Amino acid sequence: MSERITIRRPDDWHVHLRDGAMLEAVVAHTAAQFGRAIIMPNLVPPVVTTTDALAYRRRIEAALPPDSEFKPLMTLYMTDDTDASDVIAGYADGTIAAVKLYPQHATTNAHFGISRIEAVYPVLAAMERTGVPLLMHGEVTDGEVDIFDREAVFVERVLEPLAKRFPGLTITMEHVTSAEGVAFVEAARPGIGATITPHHLMFNRNAIFQGGIRPHYYCLPIAKRENHRQALRRAATSGSPRFFLGTDTAPHTRGAKEAACGCAGLFVAPVALATYAQVFDEEGALDTFEAFASLNGPRHYGLEPNQGTVTLVKRPRFVAEDVALATGEAVHVYRGGEEVTWTVEG
Ligand SMILES: NC(=O)N[C@@H](CC(=O)O)C(=O)O
Ligand SMILES: [Zn+2]
Ligand SMILES: [Zn+2]
Image (cartoon, rainbow, N blue to C red; front, side, top):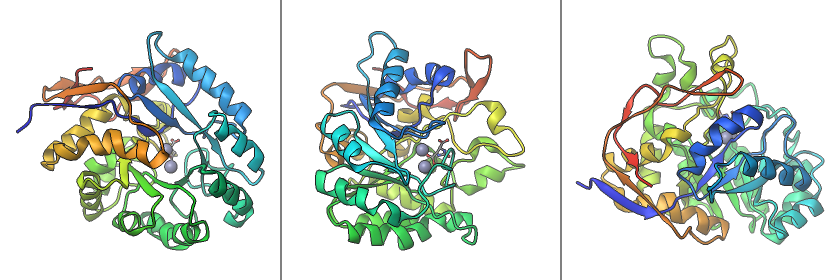
């Protein structure tokens, strides 16, 4: 049994850093572990143009610890008005790394999302031509579809046809949570990959209702049955280059979560790498950990892996319950108040 593991410095391919006081409070947790991260654009208002992305990147850089080498990779939020030439130019000059597509009303701040996928076909065609990756929140929003089935229905109704219509488009199915999603990605054409979060590897839907309603286990896509969690564990640890690390760290204040209508999203950054390492250790798969955390993502995005390394040791560490904001508000940390078994050494 391994007690220590050194891997290339990993990247986080799905992160919400927010803005303002929240950004200030959370960014160091991601920057301490990861070389790069794909930054989600669902601010209010969202990041829709390369000019917005550049300004947001500067705010992130200003909030980083002074000696940090962390590199934010920016994304645009696809709307009905997204301008293909802005996307292409922003990708060509390195301002943006990808475009994110949210089905309207699918998740936090998705009310700006596109109305009909057909509306953005010309932009998708331009992205296919020029190699700009498309990131998708993979859920249908049709109220007739059960919340636990929204990902599987999305795969069938939206993702499969889209992957066929644009055979050269690089697509990331973000935060895959279901056996159906895993099966699609495994069998899909080249250029299709998926991120897997630490929390969907850790708990199933029972956690949301254990002894009462538990808002700190509520995120989207919602956690599913145990067989889906097992499918995710198999996919992540399989060594398949299709699956890679994306934490979906999504901080909300306690006030926003512990409410009659609580926000979806978990703040997982402080325990992200430790939690993934625990999962790979439990599965007896530490040999495939580096591929998942540090190699598969860069390959999917056509980037080089990071140069440096991180070392994790199997040493228990107590996790603080909350992270404080300068406003006086607090953000509950996923696994806060618990001991985690793995610790990042640096
Ligand atoms: N994952 C979540 O539950 N929430 C995310 C949005 C998202 O990634 O869908 C957020 O921005 O809060
Ligand atoms: Zn999402
Ligand atoms: Zn997200």
